[in-house]
Length: 233
Length: 285
Image (cartoon, rainbow over all chains, first blue to last red; front, side, top):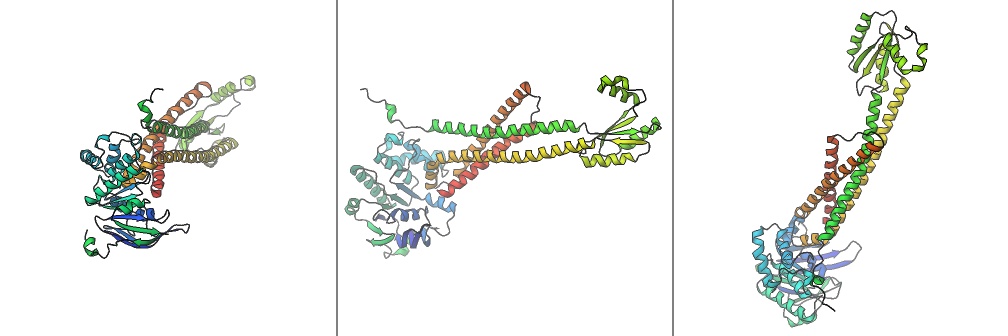
C-alpha cells in the first residue's frame, strides 16, 4: 500500500534527511516512528503525502508514484489520506464545523453532502456539541480532535500523525491516542511520529526507529507477511 | 473585580483586518493607476495642444500678378486633387490687405491697396503635416504656372515636428516607467494578500485542493480589486481634470475608449498580478 524503496533525501545545502530507507506499510497497520529530533521522522511522513519527494529511490502510495506524480496527482492523493500535526493547523477565523467542512469544500463536494459528513466526523471525535466553537475557544486536546475530524472526514485509508500529542498534557495525550486507536480499529492505517515513548511502550504496534535518517530498527516489518496480498489493496 | 466579558475568549476574527487590507490594496491600485492617469492626461493634453498648433501648418502660394482669376481657380482645382491636401482657400488682394490690417493695426497706413499679392492657402490633412511632406508638396507647387512664390514657415514646421517627436519619446518612456511602477506596486499588494492567507492556502493544499481551486478566488479578487481601483483612479483623475480646468488651464479628458482601457488595464493588472503571486506561492507550499 505504501512502499519506500531505497529512499534518500538530500537537501540542497548538503544535509541528508533520509538515507536509503526501504519500508512497507500494509493496509490498516498502526506504525510508530521514533527517534531523536532531526532523525528524519517528519521528513519520512512528508514523503507519504508527497510534500517531499526523494532525491533518489521511490515512494509509492497506492497507485501514486513519487517519480511521476504531477501536482494534480498530489492533490488527488491527499484526498485519500489525512494528516494531523503538533500545531493542529486550524483556521482561527472558522468554527470547528467550518474547519472540518473546509476539507470537503475545497475538493468540490456538493454542499448537501458536506453537512452530514461533518456532523459524523465531529461526533466520531467526541465533539458533536462543540461544532460552533472557534479554535480559540477550545482546549489543545479539543483542537487536535477538530484536526482529526478534518483528517478523517473524507474516509482516508491512512492517517498521518506528525507528533500529534506534542503540545498536549498527559490526559489529553491519552485521549488523543485512544482516538487514533479507535480510528485504526475501524480500518484506517495510522502512521504516527512521536517523542512520547510511554505511549509507544504501552501499545503493541510496530515501531520504526530512525537515527540520522536511517532505519535503525523496525520491530515487525510486515513485508514478509505476504506483501503480494497487501499490495492488492 | 468583575469577570472578563465573554468576548475575551471570543476569537479574533480577521475579517476586519482583511477588509482593511482589501481596502488598502484597492487604494494602492487606484493610486498607481491615478499616477499613471495623470501622466496620461498630461500626455493627451500635450498631444492635443500640438495638434491644434499643427492645424496651423499651411502652405501659402503667392500668385503672379498676371494670373487671371480663371487661372487661379484651375490651379486650386489641381491642388485639391493632391491626396494630402485637406482644404484650399483663395485669398484675394483685398482679403490679404484686410487681414494684414487686422494683424498689424498700428501700421495700417503703410499698406496700400495693391501692396499684397493674391494667394491661395493650402491646408494639409492630419498626418501629412511633417516637414518632409510639407516641403515635398511646396516644391511641387513652386513649379506650377503662375506661381510666384511658395512659403510654409519651414523652420517653424521643423521645430514643431521636433517638439512633437520629443514629446512622444519622453511620453513613451515616462509612460512605460509609471506603468511598470504601477505593476510592481500592485503585484506587491496582491502578494501581501496572498501571504495573509498563506496558512489557508497551506491547509487547502494539504487536504487536496487543486491549484486551480486555490487560485480561483485570488484571481477573482485581483480582478475585482483591479476594476475597483481603476474606477477609483478614473474618478480621481476626472476630479483632478475638473479642478485644473477650473483653476489653471483648459484641459481635455480621455475619451471614453481610453477611460475604459484604463479600467480594463487595472483589471488585467489585478488579474495577472494575482496569477503571478499565487503561482509563485503555490510552488513554495
